[in-house]
Image (cartoon, rainbow, N blue to C red):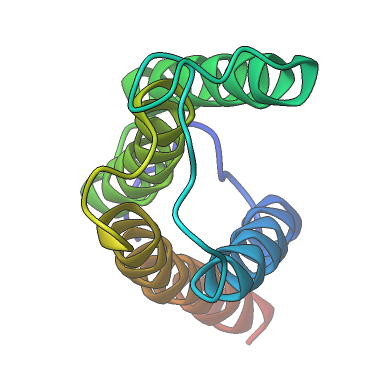
Length: 135
């Protein structure tokens, strides 16, 4: 079995997978939204909501980048890398908006969908290891 640094057991892998699926759902819903105005471009949209979204994405992408660094195995590192890339796209959208309509939301959906697939593979490896150790 591959070595994991963060998703060390089935419960942690399941919790991470559920989070990824929820955020994938949110990203899919965001596909139908109109293009977003960012803090800097195209219309300097400095509102409390836009600043809050920027701060949330900044914190989330930073934490996910740190988790990517602490990851051990290739699957786990790829999982956190795709999640942090998705959050970073959200951060860039909050800062610059959507100069190209729907490029950011589509990128987020693709990155999170890939993370979900990898998350299922990690969960399956934990389930298989649990089954092997039980027999």
